[in-house]
Length: 174
Image 1 (cartoon, rainbow, N blue to C red):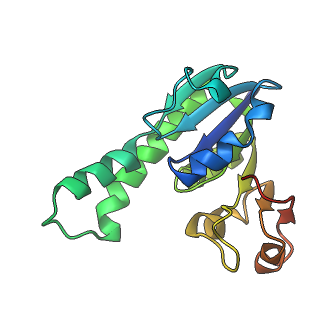
Image 2: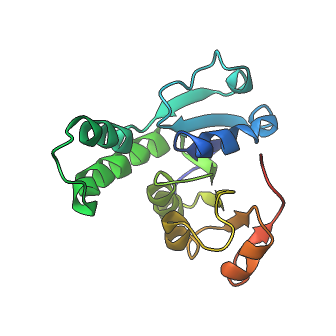
Image 3: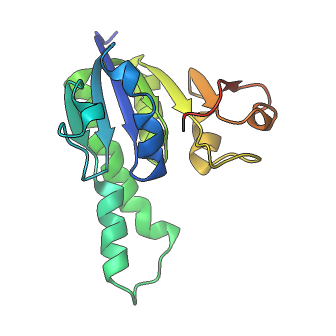
C-alpha cells in the first residue's frame, strides 16, 4: 500500500471549470492544498490562491488545443487528441507521485479522467463535481468517472436522477 500524505489536490481545466474550483477557495486554507490546472494565468498573486501549497500545471491538452487552433487547415478529430491524452495522463501521474494526496477534488473536465484512475489505483479518494453547465445530461468526463469516483456532486437537483442515484446535490458553486 502506498503511503498517502494529508494533501488535497484541487484539479480543473481553465475557463468555467477553474471559476467553479475557485468557489471552493475557503477549503484551500483548511487543507494542505495543491492546485492542478492548465490555466496558464493561475498563480499565487491571485488572492484566492494565496493559501495553497503549490500550483502545478498539466498542459498536454491546452498545448494540443493551441497547436490545432494555429493550424487552421488541420482537421480536428478525436484521434488528434490521443497523444495529448497520454501525455496528460503521464503529467498527472508525475504530479500525483510528487504529492501522494489523500484526496483529489476535480471540477473537470478532461483532467478529471486520468486523475480519477490514478487515484483509484493508488488509494486516494476522488471527488468529481459535475459542471453547473449540465442540467439534463452528463459530461463525457462525468460518464467515465462516475463508476470510479468516491463521490459525484451535481449542481442541479435534476442531475441526481440523470446519475441514477450515484450523485449528490449540494447546490451550485457559482
